[in-house]
Image 1 (cartoon, rainbow, N blue to C red):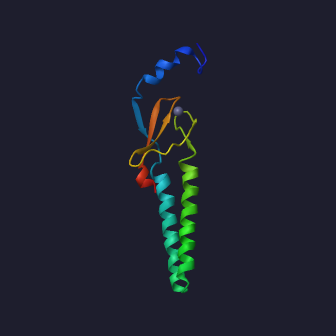
Image 2: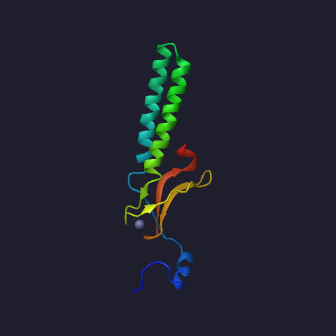
Image 3: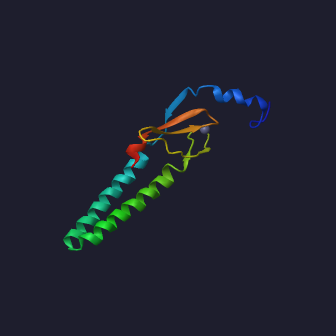
Amino acid sequence: MTPSGHSPGSEWRKAEPWPERRRAPGYPLKVKLPVSILAVVAVLVALVGIRLDSSALFFFGSLGLFTVGWLAVCSVTLCRFHCPECGQRVPFKLPPLGEPIVFPCPRCRVIWTTGMDHTQAD
Ligand SMILES: [Zn+2]
């Protein structure tokens, strides 16, 4: 038994394909649900602004609210992804446009898919 980590023979493992692709539980709802709620709240704020006849102020207010909220949602869901299998945190890397957002866990060798891609996320 060798401890996992820096063994000279670990290089070959990288070349092996990662056969398992699994859907991360709760995704993409975990991201889309709060974003949808945010969108509704932002629209409501904008509507209130129209009624109060200061729509420009409220328009930018709701836009700001949505942007800040969206960033908050992403930071707690996408940037703090923990592998459902081993609990290890998997760093978030934004894929190129059109590519799916996935979280590959090096420990379990499982690619967790979120059902979202880069364009859908924003
Ligand atoms: Zn894992």
